[in-house]
Length: 326
Image 1: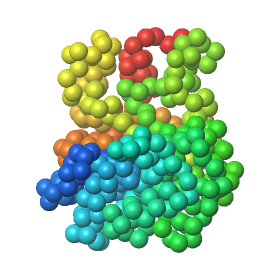
Image 2: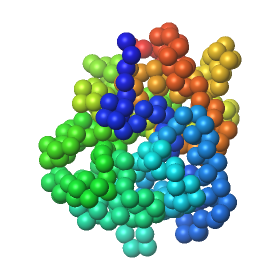
Image 3: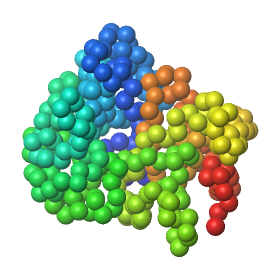
């Protein structure tokens, strides 16, 4: 049975992979970005486009705004790109400064100001998708609804979503917001298995150590919310990073990934992402690298997800978790 991504169902994007732009712009400091940073971003964008990636993921805080600024320079140099791509950004996190700690802010004023800042830095008139970055304990859903209504009415944002939220948190917001959320972005990978462990550890003592909201995968699938995975390559743990000091089961999993890549004449990146994309939830990985070679190494991921057998998927999962299933 052919399955269609929730984003594609809404007419937003049919890109099975997205490129995370957090590395763009240099460091997380006040040092200005340079022309070299723009060239690096252009090379990453070109590498992404060359393998069919047309969705680009941002946040207002990435490299303290420089990631969006650099991407804006890319669009300025190549304005024809804007209508060919999907731009997603996030708001709601305020970084620590000289006077205040890091904090979350879903107030109407902050959301509106954040979007205006992102649009200015990106040099575009609209965001395709806006996500609320992390849950704000002081959230007032009606206030978020007011901000979203204003952003949609002005044409500044087309679709809305969330990141790092549970089913209950989404439902709490959704009861005040008429437009259904399009996205929930979560950490999911072969190195961060809680999204699978939560399913298999029902009625098991081991389930008490699983850090993933109960029923979240099922809720998002039922509500046709696109599940996006941040950190899907697990920081290279299974695709080339030195793991000599990692636990034996991690080293064994890296060897298994390489073995499968060799057998299938593909890359370790394609196997790691293919494992994630094999999940029936149609998870969309957000690749978090600006390295053109590593981006292009992900090209075969969708095909590998289609070729991956149930036995191969479970072999990778059980190896990466480091213990047998209950």
